Image: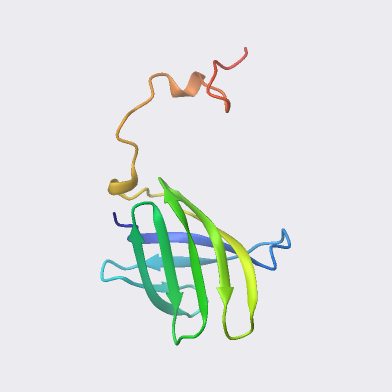
Length: 117
C-alpha cells in the first residue's frame, strides 16, 4: 500500500482540540517532507501508517489510513510531548480507493440508511 502524494497534516500537541496544519508530502522512496521544513521516513503496513521525523529522537506519528484520510497519535521524545493528528488528501492514492462502488451513495445518510426527504 502506498500513500505517496501530498496530504494536509492537522496536529494538536496535548490533544487540546485546537489543530495546526501543514502540508505533508509522502515520496515514493519512503521519505517525507512537511510544509514547515521537516523531513523523515514513512512506512505503511496493512492499514497502519508511521512516519518518523529526523534527526531522531524526535516526533513519531502512528495511526491508521483508509481512503483519503488517516488518524492517530504522536509523541516527541525530545520534549516528552504527546498529541493527536489526522491527515486528509484530495487525491486518494489508487491503492487506497474503494474497490466496491456503492450504488446511489448520494441518497445514503451518515448512518448508512436512506436519506430522509
